[in-house]
Length: 169
Image (cartoon, rainbow, N blue to C red; front, top):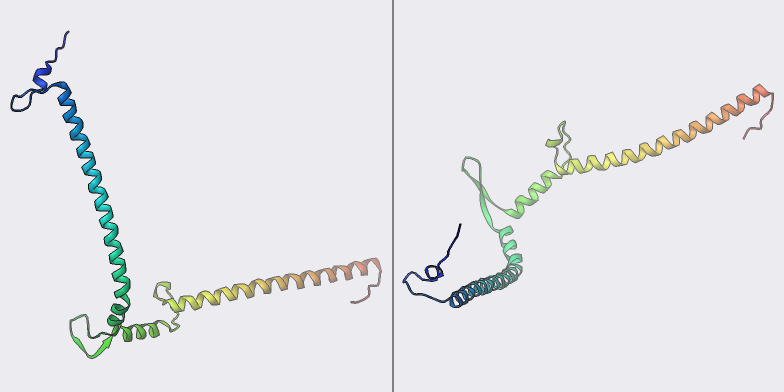
């Protein structure tokens, strides 16, 4: 089996013009290098522009955010209930935040942990921690007292059996 490749057919373009093998290689290398350089330059430009934009956005946010947050906290609005009825009194986010903090700062124990507010959970956790510490100290004191009394009892019983007199401490 013999395979022949006619480079004349491969090296012709769509118009029938021929180019030499050296010209074809030169053209392909040039096209590849150009495409790679173009892609690299575009990526670098996009990266630098993105960095500059991010820096500018951070600067603007840092300058504008305190006053914007203050304005939002003090802006008055009418509350709307779940049916769309407006309230009669104007309120602010600051007033509602303070009201909600006061509401959450009440101790409301409940049978279900999911119904307890954060304040209740924090108080319960603090009490539980103190009770654990007290229980540990109490248990240790009881063990020491038991050991002391058990040794005294054992010494007294042994002394009685042996007929010895032991001086009381």
